[in-house]
Image (tube, helix red, strand yellow):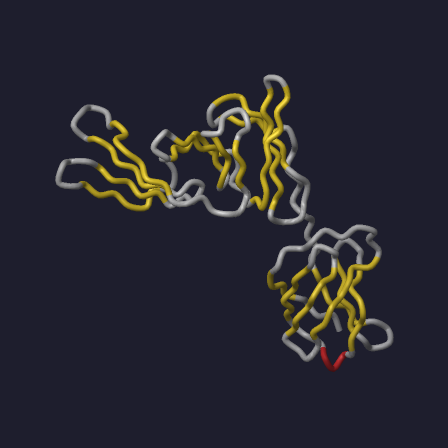
Length: 215
């Protein structure tokens, strides 16, 4: 049970629990007539995303919405466990002798994630998730010719420079997977920039930065 959002008792004394988690989305019903509660029934929201695959070893077992599911003879699904909470756009199984492997393709650009099945709802990662992209804090430097240039604290510059008359105090920075940086400023200047001095540029997080102006 995760992220409980609401509780309610019905006329029969059953406790209904609504969870705020979306992997999976669930409402569960529990008995309250004993020292310990007992799960009576659970209702699941439709799995999110497009990544889904059926286990070739068992057609009543599948992956969808970040979870492993079992379908009973009446077509009802039960969640066996969470495989990953990261958004995925594709999934496929691979089997070899006694091993069952699940290969997941992330929604965002990055390497595929591979998990090996150890039991119902129990998946062991065979790959290491990629590290978080580095961040570059921006500052604004006035050059000898009177123009302004974005620079980063780790020694890289953003080009092109722009006139002093268009000097901003804040900038909204977004980047694309190919390393291009779009800067919208509080001044007149807004355009596309690229980090220079780097062979490979990881995407930066979208957000606002405050730029200390040097005179």
